[in-house]
Amino acid sequence: MPKPTPGAQGVSNPAPAHAEANPELRLAMQALRKGLEKCVAKDLAGALEPFQEAFIHYKRAGDNRSASLTQKVIGLCFDAIKDPNHARSACKTAIRMLEIGEMPDEAARVMLMMARFEARIGANRDAVAALRTAVAVYKKFDHAQGLAEALCQYGEYEENQGRRSEATIH
Image (cartoon, rainbow, N blue to C red; front, side):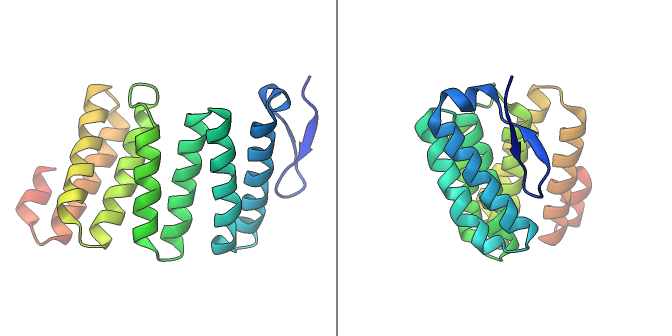
Protein backbone atom coordinates (compact mmCIF):
# COMPACT_ATOMS: atom_id res chain seq x y z
CA MET A 1 0.00 0.00 0.00
CA PRO A 2 1.49 3.38 -0.98
CA LYS A 3 2.31 5.81 1.78
CA PRO A 4 0.43 9.14 1.82
CA THR A 5 2.48 12.16 0.77
CA PRO A 6 1.62 15.80 1.39
CA GLY A 7 0.03 17.61 -1.55
CA ALA A 8 0.51 21.18 -2.72
CA GLN A 9 -1.86 22.56 -0.09
CA GLY A 10 -1.37 20.08 2.71
CA VAL A 11 -3.80 17.59 1.17
CA SER A 12 -2.69 14.00 1.52
CA ASN A 13 -2.22 12.18 -1.79
CA PRO A 14 -1.06 8.57 -2.09
CA ALA A 15 2.23 8.21 -3.97
CA PRO A 16 2.04 5.82 -6.92
CA ALA A 17 3.68 2.47 -6.14
CA HIS A 18 6.05 2.79 -9.11
CA ALA A 19 7.49 5.98 -7.59
CA GLU A 20 8.76 4.03 -4.61
CA ALA A 21 10.58 1.61 -6.91
CA ASN A 22 12.18 4.29 -9.11
CA PRO A 23 14.01 7.14 -7.37
CA GLU A 24 13.86 9.30 -10.52
CA LEU A 25 10.06 9.15 -10.43
CA ARG A 26 10.08 10.08 -6.75
CA LEU A 27 12.33 13.07 -7.50
CA ALA A 28 10.08 14.07 -10.41
CA MET A 29 7.02 14.05 -8.20
CA GLN A 30 8.80 16.09 -5.53
CA ALA A 31 9.77 18.67 -8.16
CA LEU A 32 6.21 18.73 -9.53
CA ARG A 33 4.91 19.36 -6.02
CA LYS A 34 7.31 22.32 -5.64
CA GLY A 35 6.16 23.69 -8.99
CA LEU A 36 2.51 23.33 -8.04
CA GLU A 37 3.12 25.10 -4.74
CA LYS A 38 4.62 28.01 -6.67
CA CYS A 39 1.63 28.01 -9.04
CA VAL A 40 -0.76 28.15 -6.08
CA ALA A 41 1.27 31.12 -4.80
CA LYS A 42 0.83 32.70 -8.29
CA ASP A 43 4.59 32.53 -8.99
CA LEU A 44 4.42 31.00 -12.46
CA ALA A 45 7.91 32.15 -13.41
CA GLY A 46 9.23 30.52 -10.24
CA ALA A 47 7.35 27.31 -11.04
CA LEU A 48 9.31 26.83 -14.27
CA GLU A 49 12.51 25.61 -12.61
CA PRO A 50 10.91 22.80 -10.59
CA PHE A 51 8.77 21.79 -13.58
CA GLN A 52 11.91 21.62 -15.75
CA GLU A 53 13.55 19.53 -13.04
CA ALA A 54 10.53 17.18 -13.02
CA PHE A 55 10.78 16.88 -16.81
CA ILE A 56 14.44 15.83 -16.57
CA HIS A 57 13.68 13.22 -13.89
CA TYR A 58 10.79 11.78 -15.90
CA LYS A 59 13.04 11.49 -18.96
CA ARG A 60 15.74 9.76 -16.90
CA ALA A 61 13.12 7.36 -15.58
CA GLY A 62 11.99 6.61 -19.14
CA ASP A 63 8.48 7.94 -18.47
CA ASN A 64 7.97 9.83 -21.72
CA ARG A 65 4.23 10.24 -21.15
CA SER A 66 4.73 12.13 -17.87
CA ALA A 67 7.68 14.04 -19.32
CA SER A 68 5.57 15.20 -22.25
CA LEU A 69 2.69 16.22 -20.01
CA THR A 70 5.15 18.15 -17.83
CA GLN A 71 6.32 19.98 -20.97
CA LYS A 72 2.69 20.89 -21.62
CA VAL A 73 2.50 22.44 -18.15
CA ILE A 74 5.76 24.28 -18.81
CA GLY A 75 4.26 25.63 -22.04
CA LEU A 76 1.21 26.87 -20.16
CA CYS A 77 3.43 28.63 -17.61
CA PHE A 78 5.44 30.33 -20.35
CA ASP A 79 2.19 31.37 -22.01
CA ALA A 80 0.87 32.83 -18.75
CA ILE A 81 4.02 34.93 -18.30
CA LYS A 82 3.73 36.14 -21.92
CA ASP A 83 6.63 34.21 -23.44
CA PRO A 84 5.08 32.56 -26.52
CA ASN A 85 8.42 31.51 -28.04
CA HIS A 86 9.32 29.37 -25.03
CA ALA A 87 5.71 28.16 -24.79
CA ARG A 88 5.93 27.04 -28.42
CA SER A 89 9.23 25.26 -27.79
CA ALA A 90 7.80 23.39 -24.79
CA CYS A 91 4.81 22.26 -26.86
CA LYS A 92 7.08 21.04 -29.65
CA THR A 93 9.03 18.99 -27.12
CA ALA A 94 5.82 17.55 -25.70
CA ILE A 95 4.54 16.62 -29.14
CA ARG A 96 7.82 14.94 -30.11
CA MET A 97 7.57 12.80 -26.99
CA LEU A 98 3.92 11.83 -27.36
CA GLU A 99 3.05 8.86 -29.48
CA ILE A 100 -0.13 9.99 -31.18
CA GLY A 101 -1.48 6.44 -31.06
CA GLU A 102 -0.76 6.17 -27.33
CA MET A 103 -2.46 9.38 -26.27
CA PRO A 104 -4.24 10.86 -29.28
CA ASP A 105 -6.45 13.19 -27.26
CA GLU A 106 -3.51 14.68 -25.37
CA ALA A 107 -1.35 14.96 -28.49
CA ALA A 108 -4.11 16.83 -30.33
CA ARG A 109 -4.73 19.07 -27.31
CA VAL A 110 -1.04 20.02 -27.24
CA MET A 111 -1.24 20.72 -31.00
CA LEU A 112 -4.10 23.15 -30.32
CA MET A 113 -2.02 24.86 -27.62
CA MET A 114 0.91 25.13 -29.99
CA ALA A 115 -1.33 26.60 -32.71
CA ARG A 116 -2.24 29.44 -30.33
CA PHE A 117 1.42 30.12 -29.56
CA GLU A 118 2.37 29.96 -33.25
CA ALA A 119 -0.35 32.48 -34.13
CA ARG A 120 0.76 34.86 -31.37
CA ILE A 121 4.29 35.08 -32.76
CA GLY A 122 3.10 35.36 -36.36
CA ALA A 123 4.12 31.86 -37.45
CA ASN A 124 0.87 31.46 -39.38
CA ARG A 125 1.89 28.50 -41.53
CA ASP A 126 2.92 26.61 -38.43
CA ALA A 127 -0.32 27.58 -36.68
CA VAL A 128 -2.38 26.24 -39.59
CA ALA A 129 -0.30 23.05 -39.71
CA ALA A 130 -0.86 22.46 -35.99
CA LEU A 131 -4.60 23.10 -36.33
CA ARG A 132 -4.88 20.75 -39.31
CA THR A 133 -2.95 18.04 -37.47
CA ALA A 134 -5.20 18.33 -34.42
CA VAL A 135 -8.31 18.11 -36.61
CA ALA A 136 -6.90 15.07 -38.42
CA VAL A 137 -6.05 13.28 -35.16
CA TYR A 138 -9.48 13.91 -33.70
CA LYS A 139 -11.12 12.69 -36.93
CA LYS A 140 -8.93 9.58 -37.08
CA PHE A 141 -9.79 8.57 -33.54
CA ASP A 142 -13.46 9.60 -33.86
CA HIS A 143 -13.27 12.04 -30.94
CA ALA A 144 -16.32 14.27 -31.45
CA GLN A 145 -15.74 16.69 -28.57
CA GLY A 146 -12.09 17.23 -29.47
CA LEU A 147 -12.97 17.65 -33.13
CA ALA A 148 -15.55 20.29 -32.28
CA GLU A 149 -13.01 22.14 -30.13
CA ALA A 150 -10.36 21.97 -32.87
CA LEU A 151 -12.74 23.16 -35.58
CA CYS A 152 -13.90 26.05 -33.39
CA GLN A 153 -10.31 27.09 -32.73
CA TYR A 154 -9.51 26.79 -36.44
CA GLY A 155 -12.51 28.99 -37.26
CA GLU A 156 -11.46 31.58 -34.66
CA TYR A 157 -7.97 31.60 -36.13
CA GLU A 158 -9.35 32.22 -39.64
CA GLU A 159 -11.62 34.98 -38.36
CA ASN A 160 -8.71 36.64 -36.52
CA GLN A 161 -6.77 36.56 -39.79
CA GLY A 162 -9.63 38.44 -41.46
CA ARG A 163 -10.85 35.43 -43.41
CA ARG A 164 -14.44 35.36 -42.26
CA SER A 165 -15.70 33.12 -45.08
CA GLU A 166 -13.03 30.50 -44.30
CA ALA A 167 -13.89 30.76 -40.61
CA THR A 168 -17.46 29.60 -41.25
CA ILE A 169 -16.18 26.51 -43.09
CA HIS A 170 -14.39 25.31 -39.97
